[in-house]
Length: 375
Ligand SMILES: *Cc1c(COP(=O)(O)O)cnc(C)c1O
Image 1 (cartoon, rainbow, N blue to C red):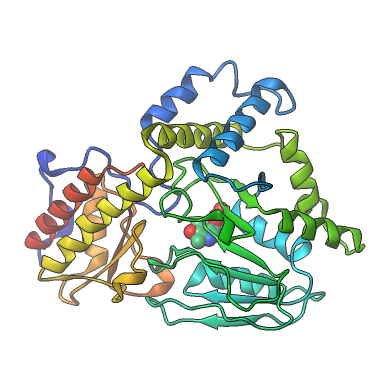
Image 2: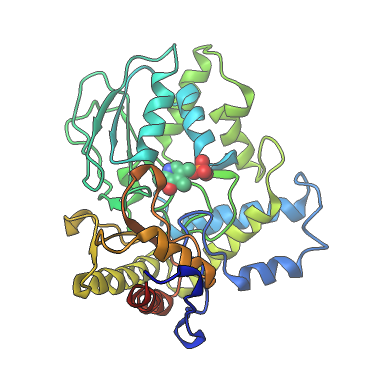
């Protein structure tokens, strides 16, 4: 085997941008330039004043348009990323019993948070072997259903639909952290469609955003009124009230808010969600098409119906070390193609988020071929 550190990918093969990580993911240089233009008037200014609240408002308004928000739904945001949203849901959205469908690491984390809460009933968890999809099933007494739209650790994505036969006031919580903005969705099929902006929204991490239905807002108010202990930082009702004022309970990352608003407006200017979903599908057809033709690569997700168009997971032949390929790519400026560690597979994982140019995905496949020929 050749010494991987000596493999140099010719400049004319390289993608224009080498960031293919699944989060934090590629931030468009144009967005960073826009941030730079407001660096003295926006960064370092009070989040309780107009300048910052206008950016929160721009983000909330942009998202409402981008997702064609149904009547009565509201864009809510607060600090701490998706992980903090899970804990907030534990305290403020689940009455007693939740049911989860988990197809990997991220879906399982929400279920674990619920199981750890002494004041909630034991959740039902339907889990699937990695690379396949789990499904929710109607169950009497379940008041919250949770499923990831796109499981970032495995590259499995599922259509977003309410559970037929579920109790009429059960809430549908969709972890759309890596799917929102890149996969089609009818938000009316959800009660909270939640995500963080470091994936398809091409921003940095640190905040969570949820599209709340009137039923979800009512549930948060009901649980708060019941007198349950709720840590102030995780209080969903506070998040709702603060969002309506175009602010957050405590200080947000101003750059994150701005970059997310930039990405939303950029995607809107390109044609909105329909455009974004088409673009990720194009990138997906490039990389899966390449894998199908390749002698050493195969899509990990065998069922094309649940194969993600925003996160591609590609298994390599055991004779080709994915770690070595990723390491050579990294040494050549193409970063974060490594598989999700805990999955433990000989695999490459590639983000196909809207900020990533399909032409760069194409170039990436040529770079992988170039490296494998020389290993
Ligand atoms: C990235 C990711 C998370 C975690 O998001 P944080 O903002 O880091 O808490 C949760 N769920 C999914 C599906 C993800 O892709």
